[in-house]
Length: 279
Image (cartoon, rainbow, N blue to C red):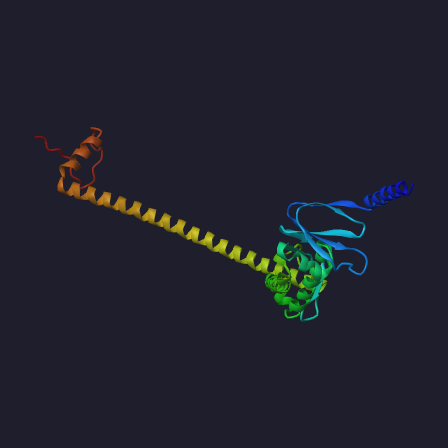
């Protein structure tokens, strides 16, 4: 009877243990860290686990860390201030990956999963670096192309702080244009408008010069054409005159060809009667 009761108790205990257990899976591309959730060893006792399926007791959990590139876009914009006390806002994205050989070290440092680390700790590091480096720039230098330099400096700081921990930062990127105070926006827009007007004026001047040059070239072409025609005509006349001087009989032949066969009806005093020499 006692053996029967003991067997029943064992079955009930095993069922209770199975009921309190659950299966966790570490997929490909991840490294897991199994930790205790309660008791004196809470979050302290860790065991790194690879890809596979694991049974967990009610007091255990597995934190999964992806070892492939992660791209996280922060929904809430970052706010930072320039050296001339101008507040600027912008959305930022970060790309990074976790070194699989330092997963346990990362968990020991933050005692959080990768999502919480990204949303809280990495974001705070980005914010601190933005505030630090934007405070060395005035609003004009930032608006005049300084945002690229700012992002490069923030990336350097982030890599210097997180890479040794096993969180390898690949790059940061602006997800939106920098949001300046309204008076700064108005100033920037006024400068852009003035620049556009100047460019338009330069284009108009260049076009006018081009049209004037075109007209000059056209007039020059017409003048040269006229000169060439006049020279050709003069040369033709000179050649004709020279030919007639050398051949006077041509004039007589032309006169004969043009004569209608009648003599002049009226001759003035001293006028000679037309005479044709017949041979």
